[in-house]
Structure formats: structure tokens, C-alpha cells
Length: 345
Image (cartoon, rainbow, N blue to C red; front, side, top):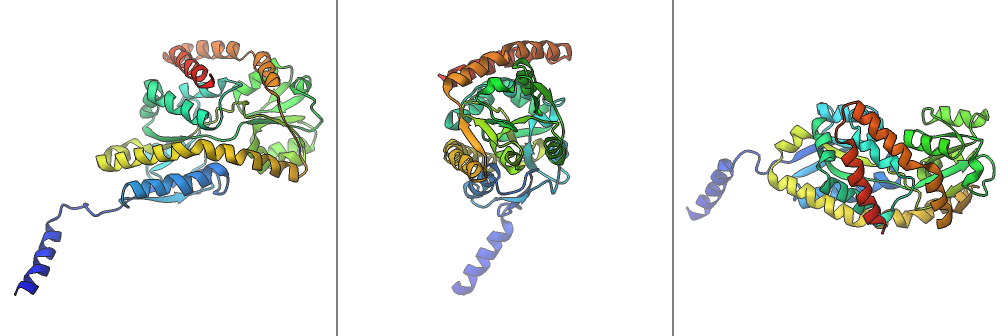
């Protein structure tokens, strides 16, 4: 009888367990970029496994790449609605009207890289509530701010230095970078990334492009604009926010929220070194493919920072945002500038 009683007791105990104790929650992830580059591989190989490990398998990620569930421009709406994706990458630049404060990150021409870059964004979200509040207003919560490589200048003609861009035509998607180019004497233009950019080089419409070095490489811009100037000090400020639908987040058990937080901490500790370790191989790949790459000296970077007159652009942006009713623009800029100065010491 004892041998029978034990299995029956165990079965009864399992039946009486609260529903969902052993359940797995699958989170659908959307990313507009293909799986393969540094950022996407880091999320896939480091952050997602950390979430599953820290949650002891209670959380699983169903990942979708290359715009399978949503384009980059629709990602905020897609994740906010939560019909096809629960989590995913939101690029603030693609949602400028919804995320006005988040535009301030690109307003600096020079900034930190590697671990210091990770620390900058960690402090921003930890110390300035306005950024998390802006995301909450849009129905999402930030899990992990991923970043990328620094800015590079790809030119069709030799550049002895950045002064040589004067009088030439350059493409940039960022309104901040367009200001920087204009103040440095170049003519800035904007156009969709991809075939249109490639055709503009082929027709001679463009003399150069200001973009993160890996994006330039992926589009093979160096085949048409092989003269490349780059530096780790050239700040991109192009943050990829890995966010979750607010309702989905609120519905998670506290232990699962804590697991995601721990996973983000684990990822954060290695993200800076991963970026640093991949920087030189990225430049080597450009050189191997025929590009002439030069790393700018610190004095050249300081000159670039001066000629961009970035603080004038920031002041103008604050006035525009205040006129549009964004009351936190001035204090947010002030706080972000202080953190930037602290991290750069």
C-alpha cells in the first residue's frame, strides 16, 4: 500500500499546485536588422540566454529579425500595441515625434566608447526619470539600451582631414549631424538608406556620407567612397532601445522582472568590451575590401567638436521643443550634458 500511496500523493500534490507555476512565458521579439552584425549577435548570444538562465527557463524568447514582424519605423507602435510582438528594438530617431527627449543623445559630436558608453546610458536612465517617463507614455518599458560603433566619414575623394569636407555634399539621416556638416562648410542632404543612397553615389550626387562605420561597411559604401576617417571619439549616440510592452511587463511575476534586470546587468558588463574588441576587426575588414582607413588624432577630434558648434544646435533644439510643449527639454539636456562630462573625465 505504501508504494501505491506515494505516487498518488505526488499526483494529487501536482494537481493542487497553482496554475502557471511551471508555465513558460514566451516573449516575441522584433528587430528590423538581420541577425549577424555585432549588435544583433550580442542580443541573441548574450542577452537572450541570460534572460532564460536567470529566469530558470520560465522566460523564453521567440526572436524575429530583418523586419519580419515590423519595420524599424513602425517598431514603437508594434510593441506598444502588443499584437505581434512583446519586446523589440526601438530606434528613437525613427520615432522623433513620440520620443522627443530621446533625440538629445545625438546632439554631441564627441563622446565615450566601450565601457564608458555603456556607463553613460546606464546613468541616463538611472538618474533622469524623464526618459523612462517618456517611454511609459508610449506604452513601453526599457530593458536594455544597446549601442553600436562610432561615426565614420566615407568620402569619394581623399580627405587629408575633416576640413576637406567643406564645399562638398554629404548624406546624414540625423538632423543633428546635418547641422554639424552645415556648420563645417559642407552641404548636408537626407535620403532613404539603401538603394537610393547607393544610386546617389553612382550618379555623383553625393561626395560622402556620415554614418556609423559598420552600417557603411554593410551597405558597401566604401566601394564608392573608399576614403574613410574614423575615431572611437566620434560619438554616434544612436541608441537601440530594447523595450517591452508595458502591459506585458506589468503582467510578469516580480521574480521574472528581477530575472530580466539581472540579465541586463550581465549583458551590460560585457557589452563595452565586445564593442572595443570588434572595432579593429571592423576596420581591418574595410581595409581588406579596398578602403583607405585613417584613425583621426585627438587634436583633429577636438577641432571637429569646435567647428560643429553643437551647443548652438542644442540651444535651438531646446527652444523648438519648448515651443512644441516639451517642458523637460532644457533640464534633460542639462542633466545629460553633465553625465556626458562626468563620463568623459
